[in-house]
Length: 110
Image 1 (cartoon, rainbow, N blue to C red):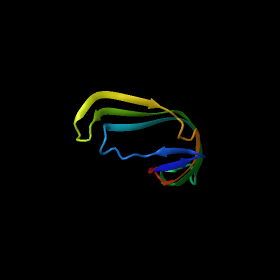
Image 2: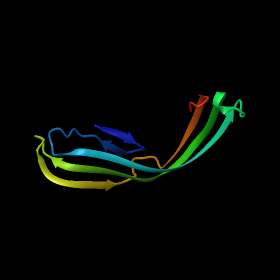
Image 3: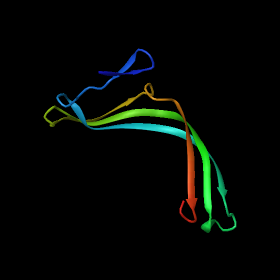
Image 4: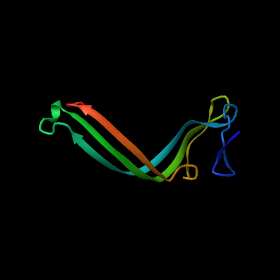
């Protein structure tokens, strides 16, 4: 079973219940983002009793991506090796991202 990603590349998802596997597994993505937001208050003299809106976007770039596995176990759930494995690759992740933001609030809430 695989997932097609941009052409002939496939990313296989295997069932590891009956094989050696890590007890804990984590994916870490590090992004650098720059936000831009425009704010408007309907009553700027008294913002504690006023409606406010904000529109903007965040542009970012992926700095690093890695997976981390801890404590290798066998199929029976017994610990076979106590170590940490890290693999670093940005191959299957988008390098950049742009996200729109919108906020509406009243008074001191938001």
